Image 1 (cartoon, rainbow, N blue to C red):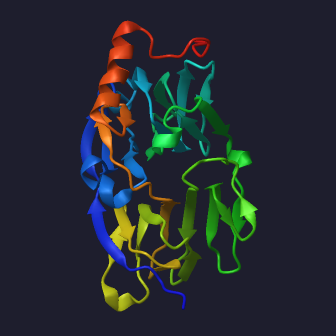
Image 2: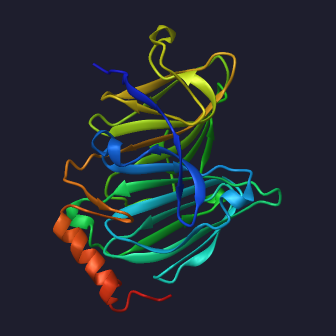
Image 3: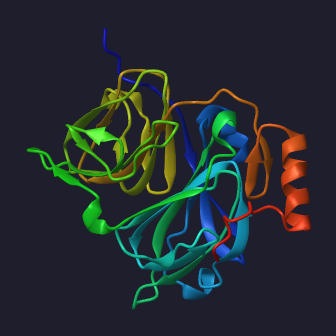
Length: 291
């Protein structure tokens, strides 16, 4: 019998700083890792103050994870050690698989009004894939399918499949779904999910009840993350105002996590080896550094 997922917790994103001093809000991070597996972190770097984001995230390493950058508004310059460079623009996304090692930088530029609206999600890699070849998937606004239902629900499919439409990001080992969903006022929305997968929503505008009925009193608004329990679907119900949220799901790894800054492995020994390679200049595999 099909079951709608209940809400396990609702968390408010907390202010912090990262990179060279970028002001952002962290929706989830290290303390939430066991419950959010395979997702490690979600950062919200929306801002209309250029001095809060222009210093950006200068050159830094990654190993053992994937970073997912999604911009609603503004531009971000990027470059990495496997030869990719360019600008992530409004409505675009970048899914970077660090694998055995990559060095990159991301420098938010904002738009002509000095506004940036973006998010970065970190996804863990299983032990068997942590040392895979680095890979980059960049998708433009026009690459991302936009679905409009009869009742006015808008869904942008970055990864995963909705109503037979598959997003442009593919071949990710945790079988993720990454959707940008807008539900109009006074509307009930239900979306199927894979039983056993971790599912969460991050509200980026408006508010809604994230449960089967309005009496549950599980309302979430802007900058709140909603973690669901297990089940076959999630249900969202709006009242007088619409809601827009990111919906992420993926297969949990159930593996130990050893996290050291931008590197996430399974053991402390693996972490120490990675940082030793950084010090010795052997972190990037021979032939992989095309910067």
